[in-house]
Image (cartoon, rainbow, N blue to C red):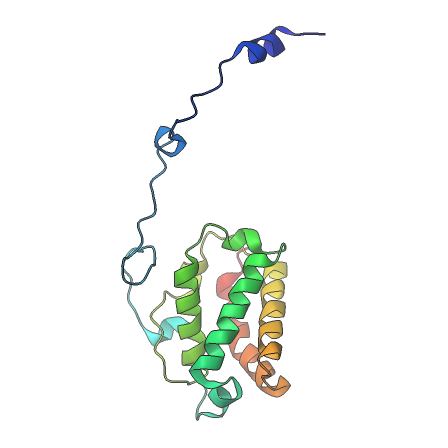
Amino acid sequence: MFTAAFALLLLQQAPEADVDWDAEFGVEAEERDPVTGEIPVEPYAQSNANAGATPFTGTSMANHFGGQDGIRQIVDRLVDLNYADPRIAAIFAGHDEVRLRRTLFEQFCYILNAGCDYTGRDMQSSHEGLGTRKPDMNALVENLQIAMREQDVPFAAQNRFLAKLAPMSGDVIER
């Protein structure tokens, strides 16, 4: 049983193979910084206060996390887990992974007092419009716990770090 609409579909010509669909729909190519590999963002005031928490005192927390090298490994594993996690992967899809890895490392390194400054945006503006929900935040925290456990961060140090990060959820969760 053919309908007129179905007959029209059958008679339509396939589009040419060499159509530039991005140009057809006005999609602009992402131009990355040639040095950092990051997609440029609108200017903002850089400040350690944007990290969302004050750093720990002393170096014991940084040592528990393996210093800057250990923190970088935790961040890299966390980002990999988040991009692969079907519960939250869609939140990260289409975002600048290079910038995410750098700013997350800086944030953790700053808060753990491992000798870094944080150059990213504040938590509220950097998460605005993502539609993050409490279950999304819970999934991210679970992934962070996996990354810290794999790096042999002592359980007590994990909890102290999570306690520093927890108040930021109010600036991240939107719905």
